[in-house]
Amino acid sequence: MPVFVLVCAQYGSAPQNPTGPKSPIGSTSIPRKGRPRNAVSLYYSRKGIKMHPLHHPLFIQFIIHFNEEKDYFECHEVGEEYWKSIAPKDKLHPLTGWIQLAVGMYHWRRSNYPGALRSFIRSKVKLADGGLWVEGFDQEKLIALVSGAIEDVTDRKPFSPFQLPVTSVDLIKTVQSYQAANPIAQQDPYYIMHKHRLRDRSSIINLREQRKRRNLEL
Image (cartoon, rainbow, N blue to C red; front, side):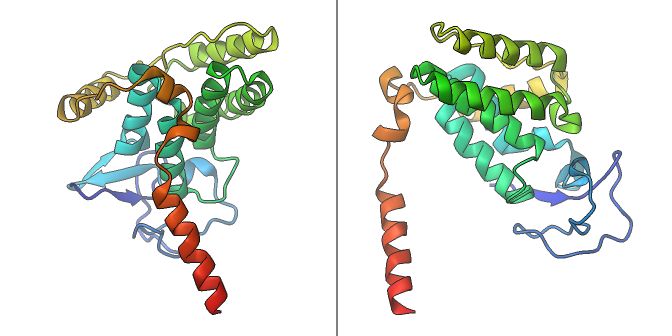
């Protein structure tokens, strides 16, 4: 597996003398206090090449799960993993807007209209002001799609999936390359629809048991 290192940069160039604590995955970053969100880990490096943060493998997976598989649960999983690696606990980070969009789609498909509405509204606010984190997408069309979803769930209309409007040629090529190297496996539609209930949770249960034992030992 290639090693991806997050690098803090702003306006396309990294600071000459980065300061501050190391990030959870080993990168350096400027102090969080007073730092604009769009200056947090703007680019990551692969073999010394600076790249846009939305080209990160986890976000590429997000796009594929959303557009090709309609697996919104996995969108949430990979989106949250990426978010925790670059902006843990920052619930206003634009990346959470993408995650909430996927959550809204998941709820809508399951006819959870109140949950979908809350998620879409929160997502729209963050993506409308997403800055760097919506580059490579038709932002106007994206916001229109989210607005349409808000209207549809408000009117209790049936689930209607849509595609994320990717416009960047480089991002499209990156997605296609990832798909070629990682073919999509067919999944049961019912399983995808109710994945939070039907997935194998043995690893999660084991982790909780380990934490309980550690707490008892303290």
